[in-house]
Structure formats: structure tokens, C-alpha cells
Length: 319
Ligand code: XMP
Image (cartoon, rainbow, N blue to C red; front, side, top):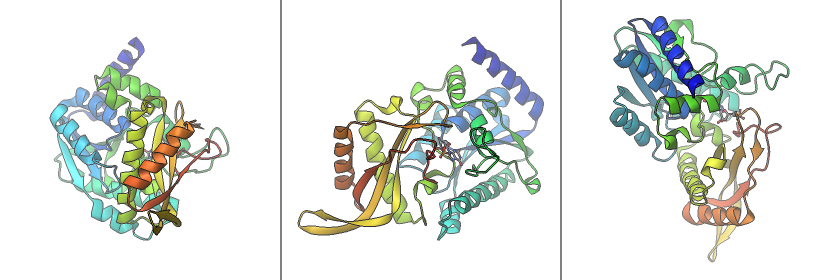
């Protein structure tokens, strides 16, 4: 696609102009956006780039290992694996308000980047994979009144005290364009096709207060659900699919015994850019089979529901 090739060359030129001979650190989430940003910036300035992958303890099953392997071994991009789970989960303890969660996570991301930036000589820039919808959704919604629906973890500029300037080479792009750019940069199709994963991670799929127990249950249920979707060949038809663990326990029966465990909700939507979305019309067979598998394979869940809300009026994530 010649347009994307031209975009890429122009973006590389702009990054070089902006950065000069200074060092850049890039926040890597493992998602498509920050990965495309990192590979693009690496093409522009090579080893002036160091990636920082913040493991906030809110990642999916095996996610940290996969990201670290891909960037270190496959791309040879210098990567710091920041294991900050105790910090994030500690600060989030008892926090149940969605905006408070998001703001806490946003603040900690900045603290952590600042800490690692301080360890890199000459670091003057922080790169992020912010997209156009991130920018507009944080200030308004569908052209409506200017009201904050959700504070995205990576939007709103950096506090002065951080002393880093922002590099956001994807700020004008929509998701499909980022994927086209990723393709242009030679990222594997399987990686480019990954469902989006939000910066606040599992925190916003765990309504109410977050506990390590709930996160562990959520990870297991999510892995079974995604496995089901892949086995049925549906992964690429769906924009995003995930499990949310609900802050409610319900009574069930298993064998001869009573259970009293968490309920969860499955979410799957189709969308072009995440701004609007329709729930995915799974067959009843698929839903029934998936519910049975989750309840049999995941200790701690005894009830499975399917979220049939489109966006609007729902949002894709639960918080
Ligand atoms: P909502 O829930 O607002 O989500 O309908 C729209 C898309 O944005 C993702 N999302 C985020 N991504 N930081 C991110 O990087 C965030 O704070 C954030 N909140 C939502 C969400 O997963 C969906 O793809």
C-alpha cells in the first residue's frame, strides 16, 4: 500500500527531526499500538530507543513472557522488563471506583517511566502508541458534549515534573491504519491481528475492588474463552473478546454439592475503530459449550453470562 509506505517514510523523518541524537524510552504494553510505535521508532533511530515494558500485574495469562521474548529475541530491541505488580496492586487495593482505578494506574505508569528514564543517560523523550480515538474519546464522545467517558491511561500529556517530551507517531491514525502500518513494517500477521488490550489491563475487567484471587480466576477464564474462539475459527471476525469477572457470587450445584462462586460475563464485539461496536452473535451451541468449559476448568466461577450490549449505549470495556 503506497499510502502507508509514504506515511511510514514521513513518520520516520519526523521522528528523527524531533529526537535528534537524544535517547527515547517507549512504553510497551504488548498491544499492537505500542508495538507498532516501537518498531517504527526503532527504524527511525535504532539503539537510541529503549523499550520499557511495565508489568503491572494486570496482564493476561503468559502475556509478559510473550512480549519480552518477541521484542528481545525477535526484534533485538533493548527492553527493560519492569516487574511492578506489587506497586500497582498495592496502590489499587480497596479501590473500586472506575475513574479512581484509571487515574491511579495512569499516575503509577508515569512514576514507573520516570524511574526507568532516570536510569537511561540522555533520555529526553517518552514514546507512546496513542491513537486518534484515544485522543478524542478522552475529551468527547461521538461528537456529543465534551464529557469524559473514561480517562485513558496514556492521554493528557505528561506532568511538567517528568521532564520528558512526548513522541506519539500514531496520534493521527485509526486502528485499521495502525495495522496497515504494522504490516508495512513487517510485523507478523498473527501479531497485527491481535485483539486490542487496554493499558489498565484486567483492572477494568474486574468491576469493584481488585484482588489477586479474582485476577487469577479472570486470567484462567479468559484463556479458556479465547481458546474456544480460536478453535471455532472466530478470532479474526471479532474486534475484541474478553471475560469480565463480576463482583458478585452466586449459588450453584456441582456433583452433590452446593457452590458459592463468582459469576463472569463474556464480551465479544465487532467494530471498525472501537468508537462504536455491536455485540457478536455467537451461536447458542458455542455459548453453551464455552460456559460448560469455563465452569469445569476454572475453579472459582460457577455462572457464565453473555453481554449483549452494543456501543453505544454500553462501552466495550466494563469500566
Ligand atoms: P471503551 O471501553 O471505551 O473502549 O468502549 C474502546 C477501546 O479502547 C480500549 N480502551 C483503552 N485502551 N487505554 C487503552 O490503551 C485505556 O485506558 C483504555 N480504555 C479502553 C478498549 O479496550 C477498546 O478497544
